[in-house]
Length: 144
Image: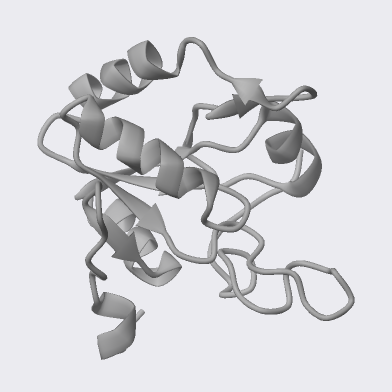
């Protein structure tokens, strides 16, 4: 898959490594340069779909959407196993993954936010999956 110049761009961010297009994240993962960490809830991954091979690590937990108290330790363990690789973080729309990337930076871990997330922004009818996101761009995913 040839990436356009925009898809290859690392957008600067405040407080974390940067924002990247879903296509660049997948390119890095395929090339063995990155590990994809899915920070959505277990429920989201089960009901909406998941990226094969992604590390499941919820930023918040369903149903209360309370902060995952084990996030820091779990992310540090992932970073240690992925030594020398980039971490790319995916959530539903690219909001929670920004918060998780900022927390990673506070822990001394470099992590990138995947723009548009798994489902992209909601359209005028309040539906996701039509304006962008991992699935919209035809990147690998599966439902359980």
